[in-house]
Image 1 (cartoon, rainbow, N blue to C red):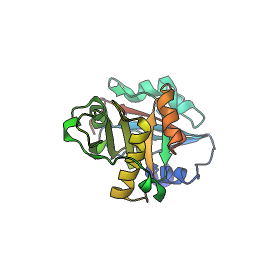
Image 2 (image 1 turned 180 degrees about the horizontal axis):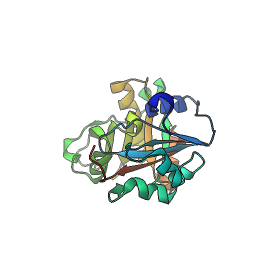
Image 3 (image 1 turned 90 degrees about the horizontal axis):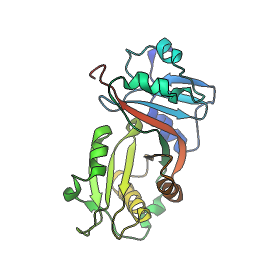
Image 4 (image 1 turned 120 degrees about the vertical axis):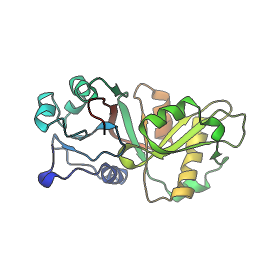
Length: 227
């Protein structure tokens, strides 16, 4: 629900705090959050508290009547259908964050380079639907189809997407991405990633690379109201 005074939660601040081990109070409540991408709405749930970045035409009363709360209700299928309307809904993902300690910059391995030739990669097309400021990177070898996207994602925080193909492993790509973000953007901001829970191999990879699960996220592109 909307906080007193009509203020909206800043999900970037929430995720920065979570990266430092500080989480919202597990009070079973929920609150509205600021949108970070035109046309995209979202539900982010953490332990005992949820955030909804949805258009104001969905009232608090209507959302709660469909079961929204901070104890799992925010991700009920009825809520997803209400938000999606006749539009599009993404999968329900595990939301992970990683801080960027300086030692990542010295991790061994090849560095990422801009790869305009990978702009048509399916992974890039997915990122373009829900993120902004996308940078398409890859390994220096032009024969490698592995791709990394660095973009403004969930909550307005830098988000990482990868797909490993050929000779390079997912761990190599994540390590290279962490070095790139640390060198290009600095260590002040956390990095987020969204992984479907059924993709256990990818989830284990991100966990081994220093990411920690902090909640869940589902994105929507409703058609009921142009933003």
